[in-house]
Length: 360
Ligand code: SF4
Image 1 (cartoon, rainbow, N blue to C red):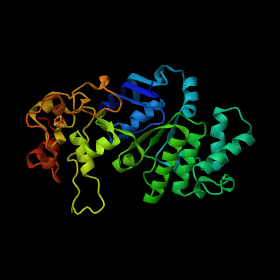
Image 2 (cartoon, rainbow, N blue to C red):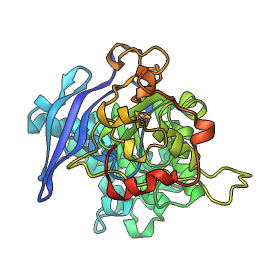
Image 3 (cartoon, rainbow, N blue to C red):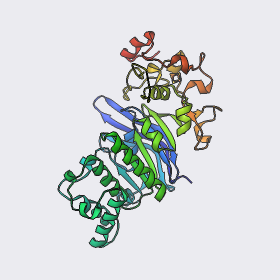
Image 4 (tube, rainbow, N blue to C red):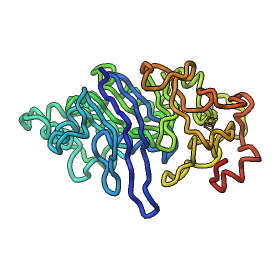
């Protein structure tokens, strides 16, 4: 059985403009010890999907449907007390902004020791010793001396390591990391990724990594979900996604990554922006931005199927390569031709439609 099973998860936000379906019926699972990447542009619903795992959706948002099962137990049916125990003990979260996650008026060591005491009946001395061990484990030099440092005495990278130490304090089964390296310089970023990789290997902790950076996913993850406008549009083992992307959105994201020795003067971009989720495009939600869109794309919502066999997602193995595009249900007349179609600019005949947000 998978460690985490997310089934038909739907999260809505009630705004003055209408109901935003930020996460719209997504399904996925994470196996024990596996690192799963959740990628997409801002506004795709990745962070909302992750916050939902810890029941951290607050008004005006609400989880309106689906199941989140951890070791077979549906978290959406747990009481507030049960969830409090699960947070930290079984699922822990590392947020993007380590500075904001640490309390400036307590020392870093005290905050880690407090996290241990909240979940375990241990003496102050034992909690302190464990906190120092954790600081050492996440690579803080002279951990006993740094225990009494305040957050402002740590660099950005060290703060993020301290937050990871806090998240690991109760040895969770699943670590949810939301953009854990954004804002850090490249060398510090590499160190944090290496740390997460080592931790996952040593303790069999599963990781859900939320990021907009496909390069980070390539370094850390075993499998990837690509999310667009609240839906999952592609799922694949990491190498399959990089070497043989199936969905035009993924192709666009990959084309926009700079590469060493790249002699392109301008990097291609995915034209347009993520649509409003109050009134998303009909049919395939990507169609106003898709260089391959045909008339059928505005009418039919493509199901997530195995790209080679058209097998529905629910009947596939976790390592199957899935995509939600009419190409894989046999409904495109011209088909996809990435070599020709990946381009620097939106096709001329699509620009007006993109600006108006209209559908075909
Ligand atoms: S279904 Fe159509 S619009 Fe959607 S990704 Fe495929 S080709 Fe593009």
